[in-house]
Amino acid sequence: MMDWKKKYLNKVVQGDCMDVMKELPDNCIDLVLTDPPYGIGAAKEKNTPRNGSWRNKSPVGYKERDWDNGIPSPKYFKNLFRVSSKQIIWGGNFFGLKGGYIFWDKMETMPNYTKGELAWVSGSKRIDKFEFLWSGYKKAIKEKRDHPTQKPLELMVWCLENYLLKNWKEDRRPIVFDGFAGSGTTAVACKKCGCDYILVEKEQDYVDICNKRLAQETLF
Image (tube, rainbow, N blue to C red; front, side):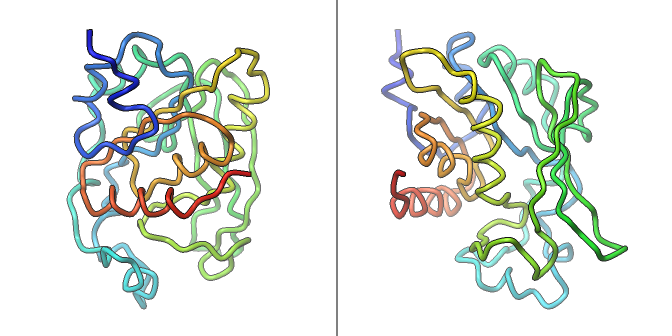
């Protein structure tokens, strides 16, 4: 039998998450924390800010890509639920997932901008709120962005602390999975919180960004 931990644990894998999940045993992942494409065209340059400032500062230039032209298939969700015991899926409202939710309140004051984002939470019927300023140039922190849909690190750390680590009682490090790694915020949050991780990303330039961020990160 293939040693999946040796092959994947604490690594950012370049490839398709469906291929990786095929090699993972049932319920081996303690928490999925992921932000899949919603099919809203976020990868295209026309959806970046009008002056393009943060796009031009990215190492990959936010060049036009096709990763957000569609949404994950039902087979993706079937495999995701097979390999994991808990899930937090950002954009769960786009996929028709019913149950509990996290509302990220961006503290937005501009009338034409979205006020927040939703993440579906498995095994829950409640709605929790996380307040964190993320409004255009007004942000709670100055965080370098390498991906057009990059979540703030504080948000992902909060998810781990409140939905995984708060009630963690096992004598081992929990394992977190993200099949749409992007710029690797999930992995950086895991490293900060003392969790193991498996990240998968199709595009090599983003894999390189993930590994660079992880190499620069220090543990608390």
